[in-house]
Image (cartoon, rainbow, N blue to C red):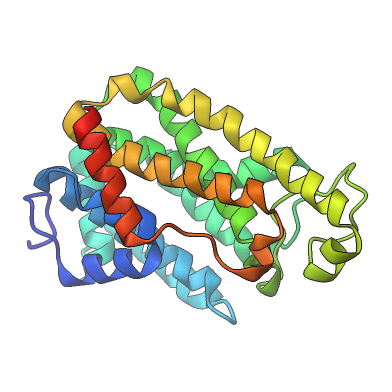
Length: 278
């Protein structure tokens, strides 16, 4: 099978991942071949599920069919779907905990019906399935020791949180608000509210950036557990999220002006810096 973890990547995995994430995609190109193939299989699966719930309007029936096909594949039924079948093979090969994929699918389903998160605990429940388990999958793909699991979760959490901050405006267009407003004095996170209460909005954004910074520090404690040949792309992605946080901290209103993302050139330059430092 072309999609197995033998160093080759199918066109469908390549294109699905490339369309879904500039930072992750470009950083992941610098993994060794065997790990890179596993990463592309993982992201092919999660991006496909995410696309169903992020479509406008959301394709709830498509998502449910996808989930049913996945469960059937786990029970041994071939689906002829290269995204699902290759993920199930990877799942078995790397001995993923089946609860991780269930948590991921649960969070994706939450996007179909839950539109606002009013307490941090609710947001973290969503993040566990949407991002922390991705860190756990990655840790298994790289064959890291179990003590790397907690930092891997924190890296997934911190990166997802920056996405929530960066995508405030975009998520509102989808009818979603992941960041809780409790004790902020803000009635909404839309542009109009931010312009009426600019100081409150800036305090809000910087407060949530502090959460990101704390979780990011916890994640970085796990970097020494990652072999050098795998650490470079992981650290590069982390560095780019730190860069994104710095841009937003300097001007919180930028989230209404553009989607803050590093260019491919910046990502490649950071890879070269990390290679030199290593």
